[in-house]
Length: 304
Figure 1 (cartoon, rainbow, N blue to C red):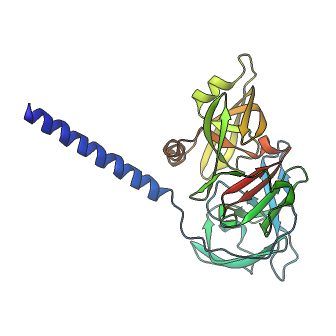
Figure 2 (figure 1 turned 90 degrees about the horizontal axis):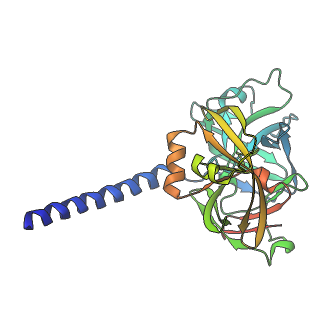
Figure 3 (figure 1 turned 120 degrees about the vertical axis):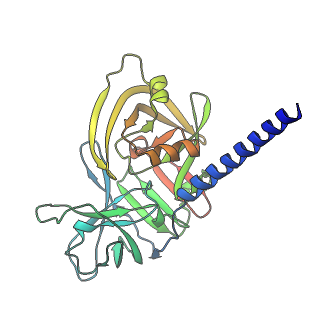
């Protein structure tokens, strides 16, 4: 009997250490590096440029000093870093780059953004034939410790906002800005769930797993199947169906008309979702009739 107790105790200790080790591993794996951005001045309203009929990609214009060309960055809160695409910046003399990092500064609206450690991602093109010169992604590091307004109604974004807008002062609620991820709590079908707000999943209302998708889609809904272009080296297949639900975020009811599940996410993306306990990702589409105020210093948010 004593031997059995020792075996059980040993097993429990090993299990506990494994769980702790797993937590530490995932915690470290998804912790972003230090934020190296320098951000100066309030931007004012920056016009949004949409790609695709379904508003598949949200682009923001930027300019370099001494260059009259308008370049674009995809605004993606799912990315913890602002990155440049190596093949797209070869001819831009204002960017000094090595294989892994770039040094430059640019203006986005009235805001000046600078760093000597911009990450470089090996994709893009030379723009010789492109009318839109998309040279990278502006990530959640631009939001960190700052106030931001995403005005989907008027197709504009304001960065590095100095004051809380008056229309939001009595409508703020808490959210988590964890590891540069915007995590919201909401009620869905009477259950409290956690959602990642990701402006990179622009054309979808809710991206979730197949089990939740099956539970939420209307029984006779038509299913739209799409193979997307590569997303960070992954070819994604999406399955979108109609649903008739609402997500209640704070006191705001947000209509949910479609639900989507995805095949092709990397193992790291699946692991992050499972580790964080999130039900899914909310894209821009669900908020196209709203204005969002996001304060990533005080972790306060408003939806109008």
